[in-house]
Structures are given as C-alpha cells and as structure tokens.
Length: 379
Length: 177
Image (cartoon, rainbow over all chains, first blue to last red; front, side, top):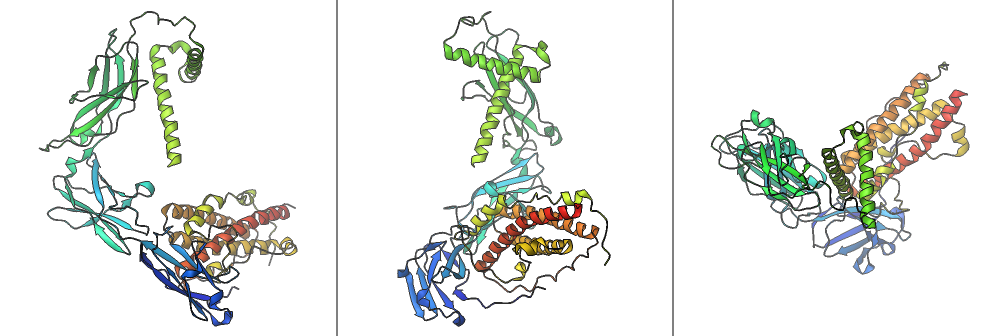
C-alpha cells in the first residue's frame, strides 16, 4: 500500500507566488531547514534557469539567504517565472513562481457584426501595450439599452483570435444593445467604452451564389456576370446591393464596379480581347424598416473566370518557335492541362476554350490554397 | 482462485499496441513550465505526494522478467489509474488553452488504455484492485511545487509508456504460448 508521507520541505522561499508590477523590485528569502546542516552562504539563486549574480545576495542569518531583484521584466511564461534556491551542488531546495506584469488597459476597437440577424460576433483589441504578461480575463458583456439585465458572452475564441466572442442566439431586434468589454487581472482592471448598436444595422450575409461569367456573343471587349442572391436574404426580408470586382489573370490590381444596385447580372465592358478575367461578387444587405445605414459587406464569392473572344483567327506567332524558355513553360502548362482534363473532364470530347479557362481558375485557387497552408503553418 | 483457461480475444491484446505517444506535447508542456524545467538533465527532487503514489516503472530486469501475468497487469493498472487522475488535474490547472486541450485529449487515450487493461484482467479471471481512495487530502502546494509535481508526473508517464510497451509484448508471448 502506498503511504503518503509529508516530508518537511528542505527549504522555504518567501514570498510564495507573488504578483508584481513590471519594473518593480523584489526581495525574497530562502530559509533552510535545520536538519539540512547547510549554511546560507553556500546557496545560490537562479531565475528562469539563469544564475543570479551573488552581488544581489545577502546572508541574513546562518539559515537564511536573501536576494534582491530590481527592475523586473514581464514574466517570460504564463505559468510564472521560476525563482529557485539551490544548494552548492546545484540541488533544488525550493522555488517560487513570480508573476510580473501590468494591469490591463481599456480594451479598444470593439466591433460587432451579425450573420443574417441570427447571432452576434464581436472582436476587440487589448488597449495600450497589449501584452500584460500575466493571465488576464476578458469578458464581453451586453444588455438591451433601456431595460434588460446584463448578460455575458460565453463563447470565446482562443489563440490568435482570443479577443473575440460569439453570441449564438436570443438576440432582440429593433432595440439597441449596449456592448462592452471588461478586462481584469491580479493587478487591476479596465472597461472599454460602451458601443451601442442595433442588430439590424450590423448585418452581414453570405456571398452571392452561382457566380458565372460568360461571353457576350462575339463581342471582344465584354463579359456578362450573373449570380444569385444569397438564399437567407429572403428569410430575413433584406434587399441587397452588390459590388463586382475583376482583374486580369496575371494582375493583382482589381477594378471595382460599384453601382450595381440590386440586379443579379451585370455587363463588364472596355475589356481587352482574348484575355482571361477573374471576377468576384459580394453582397451587402440593405436595411428595410427605415434603417438608413448599410449593412456589412459579405466576403467575396469564389472567383469565376472567362476569357473575351480574340479577334484573330490564329494567335500571331503561335506556330513560330518561341524563344526557348517560353516554349518549355507553355508546353509544360499544356501537359499539366491535358493531365487535368483526363482526370476531371470525361475524356477529350469536352475540350473547349471554356474548359481551359476553368482549369486556369482551378490553378490559381490551388496556388492560393497552397500559399494559404504555408501561411497558416508559419503563424 | 481458479485460473481461467480462456484465451483473451486477440483484439484485447491488439489495442495495447501503443498508439499513445507523449512526444507531441511533451516539449510544449516543458516550455509552458519554463526554464529550468525544459533544460536537459534538469531533475528536481521527486515530491512524495498522492499524485505520485504509483508503482515505479523502474525495476530490476530479473524481477521484471519473472513477473506473473496478474502482477504485471496489476502494476500497469495501478500505475495508469494514478497517472490518469494526475494528468487530469494537470490539465485542469493549465493556463495555456492549447496545452490544456492536448492534455485532455491525452487523458481520453489513457482512459481507453486503462479500460483495455481492466478488460483483459477480467477476461483472464483476475480481480481488479479496488479503486484507491480519492486524493482529496492534498496539502496546499505553492505554484513552484505544483510545477515540480507536474514535471514528475510527465516523467513517470514517459517511463510507464516505455515500460508498458515491453510488458504487453511479454504478455502476448506468455498468453500465446
């Protein structure tokens, strides 16, 4: 059977687990048990594994050694800095965890949005220098403006998005909410300014569905974009306004078409012939019930692509041998393309320029995903 | 006590091929504790708390070799019962959410392992030891002492995972033979 002894500690450090302000000083003592038969002058201190110079020590008595640490930096890890008292041979006699930080500052930039009026997501930034170095709790609170009890948001994110919270249900419309964030740690607390909002004023929705881009007959400089309004809009009785952006395949510069209104199709003009364009559409629920404010723009839809017709029957120089490098790049791409066709299109009977355009969109998307994965790995 | 002649179902032995590995979160746990805990060769004195009242994985070779199946299984069962409770408490007190999640996830694995061991003991007709009295009488420890205890729990866990792999290989051989 296992008997639990309570061994007297070999030594005791005081204070135990103190919470301190950055820049402050601390004097700690290590007091030895008499059974050890050691003298205080043989001991030494380490802070986070690094020896502290003996000039900071003071032998207070044969069994007590003190140390004075000045101008403390913020704690190196969340679990506290490790201040350890050692015997001459390196043996660990006792330890104390130091929590060095600062009180939180007023959280700022509180922003909220609702997805289809059903929920509320909020995010904020910690105020001031941001990093408090000690455990700090952020609580998002909300209440109906003219009545109602204070409620607390319960679903907080972690990691990079820990300054955000999600309220999944039971939200009232047509009455403003007051929302704020309270930050607290063992050194102090702070409250953000109150944000007042009506759910109906911060609504966002899904991007438009089924975005399709196609040629306008033989016109070389035009393309038609068509899309469907997101299905939930009907349910929540909002109308929508749309925005389109498009760019050349190889360019990073987007051109934005703003005055699309609430139609679900639009014609792009003034385009270059024989060129592939990438197009995206996004949606903004426009308020009814007298709300003047626009909502919040949705994410952009997945890119759709098409190419404008080319005026030349034969691409100039297409049969001429191109300078070495270009030739192998084009050939390599074509090889990849045929491989993709074999896999994704049923044989070569579906071969068309549209297929080629679809492939180019897929290529861009998978490049983007690969880069996204790399980015996420590095974060 | 009658020795059971029932051969354990192969599946019971199979689930003891160790899917449990500490390596994924061992280094993040030590980093969380901070230096000197994550330094090579750091070894604070082993506390004598209830969280660490488990049989030692370390044993002399001839003693280990000669262990009867029941004793071998009982030692594993006792060790992992204590370790499961200890790692759960470790998870509860961890401030870092990612590490907390990893530890809780690991507890699920440990729980499964403990279940397999108990099931095997029952199949072989061995009595399961009574569950130990809940360790509520914990003396209050300061945070550093808790870190030292956590450090040793992880160390014991590592030793036992290493040792159990060999225990179960030995069991497999003896039960088949």
